Length: 151
Image 1 (cartoon, one colour):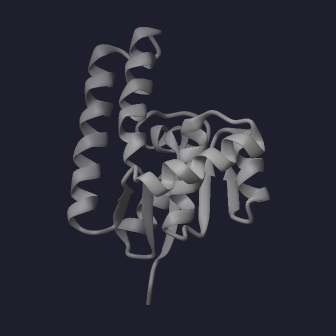
Image 2: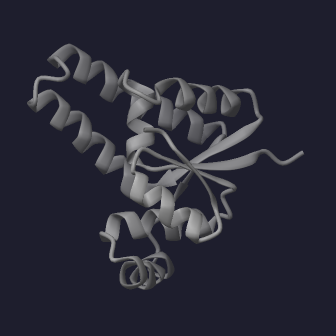
């Protein structure tokens, strides 16, 4: 049996490592991946974005230094562990994805990072998309993909 592929954008990934609205949903997704019921996916682009969000949270005082270091370490170590176990699929930023993102940028008037998320999830035939961005959730739905908004 093939596990379903769920795609997480940066806002969803961060909820795994920082307690905020939507954390329980993302926690359940990771548990289903650990249990072999689903495969988590996100773009290589997201790794830098997650690190940037965690750093921003620290700069704003939403995370203390110890919380920041723990969240960062947990994100990176869990990502590596899941990759080795093949329960995480990191989508590379390929030319075909970037080119497809241009259509999405022009059609929906969105930022390139968001367009790369949509093109990436399409490239691996993900069945579900998770985000805290309501506008992005709507656009993914218009593209014919099940989108779950975490906010």
